[in-house]
Length: 290
Image (cartoon, rainbow, N blue to C red; front, side, top):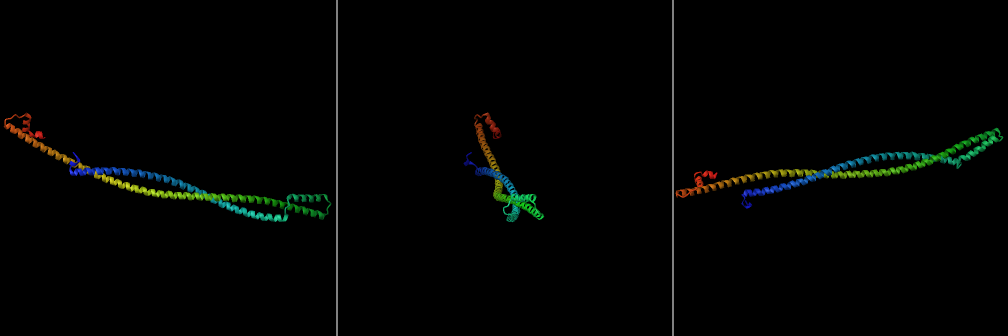
């Protein structure tokens, strides 16, 4: 039957069912797209969680290294202070010895001692002269020891100077490493801050998607209920229409049979020929209607 001949209520229902079915398909596709978007957001959140863990581990490692460098820096500064103090003291002591003995060497003193001892052994000396030589020899031995101590102090001074320079260079290296560690820590802090901000945005987006999906699913459920109701109404209308059409067809058939029976009856009264089937129709019209 053409759409223009449909029952008015049925036509409205057909249009409504078509519209509801179309809206249902649209909602299903929309929910499907949002679920895919939600999966992407969850994947991104997992990636951010992994990145946060890596950045925090890196930060903790850099902080641990920084603490070690700071401890080393303190130790180096303390050692430098001790070295500089010892260096200053040694310079003062050396200056005193230098003022006393100028540039004399142990070899010079040894030659003097050798001459004095040779005189003591070879010359005829009075007791006073011998005593004076012995005192002089003893003084020379003391002088030699002091000069040797001066040279030892000078060597120690050189070693302290080298050690001080090495400590200073190492301290510079440690300070550079400390600055580098601080820069890395700041970089990790900035990276963590950005990741936390991004995670917060994604969590907000996830909540929005969850709320929207829930809302759309409720709309879909309501729409499905309405669609089922409309389909049920259409079935009722179609069933009622079928019953009405069957009733009309039965009434039309009954009228046609009544007309035929009247015609057969008239022909019998006129003495005209009547077929066996026509007699059966005349006698049992209910069989034909049924």
